[in-house]
Structure formats: C-alpha cells, structure tokens
Length: 55
Image (cartoon, rainbow, N blue to C red; front, side):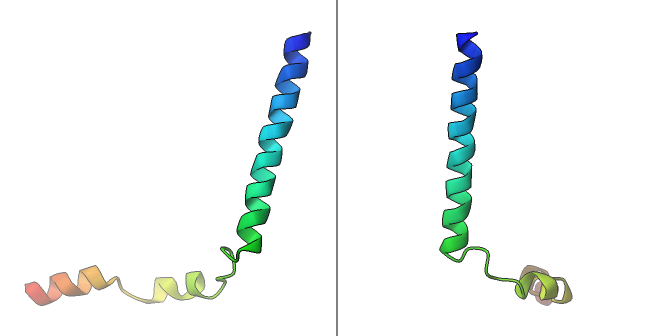
C-alpha cells in the first residue's frame, strides 16, 4: 500500500514539473510566433534552390 502512495506523490511532482516548464516557456515567449507556421508552406526550402543552381 505504501508503494501506491509513493507512486502517487512522485507522479504529482513530475506533473507539477511539466506544468512549471510549460508555464515558463509561455512566459518567456517561446510560443508567440503564430504567423510564420501558417506561411512556411508557401515558400520553397533554400537547400532545394541551391541544388537546382548547381545542376
């Protein structure tokens, strides 16, 4: 029975750690770029363009 209590405590601590990491990443602005992913598909990769020039 004591193993279940230990596992619950450890899982709550791990979940709290992930929550803190998520809140830190949102606070530091790592998820602020809403525009670029929507237009990224419209542009070709530069690597492909360089290969075409060499041929």
